[in-house]
Image (tube, rainbow, N blue to C red; front, side, top):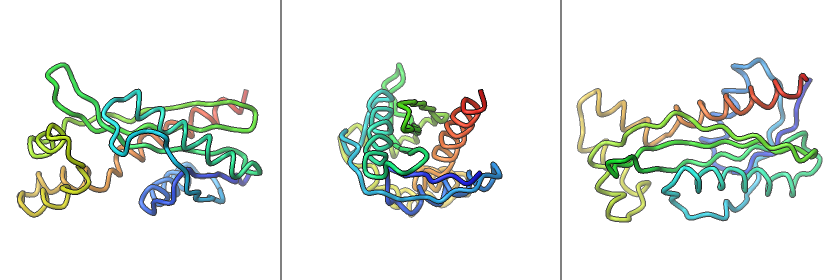
Length: 172
């Protein structure tokens, strides 16, 4: 079966990672990137707000593309642990025309001190992720910096989980 999936973003990296997961799972799909609002802050600082953003993106994309089989919303955000340090995470949500909604969260990752300081100063982390890569030249820091800049492991994890949950549910 070939799916038509409305995607609540026009972000090329998010679409690329979603397409990668679809192919890895052996699925066929036409993606419809859709400019929508998340209706949350630009830099969500709780898991709850990040999840809400993914739900809003999925719902808003499906409203615009009601002919789609389902829609998916992807939202990157941050949360604080008990020591008030920030972790990065991603929530992905699928919504279909039968009012079924499923959300899945990626793993979280404790951000380096550099990133902690940016978020604790209430600055936009995306404005500084390349600066970290320029400052930290060792291979370990470069790997971490690229993961934080590109967000690929978090997006792939949550998108894969939500697709598997949704499609497994459709089998029953």
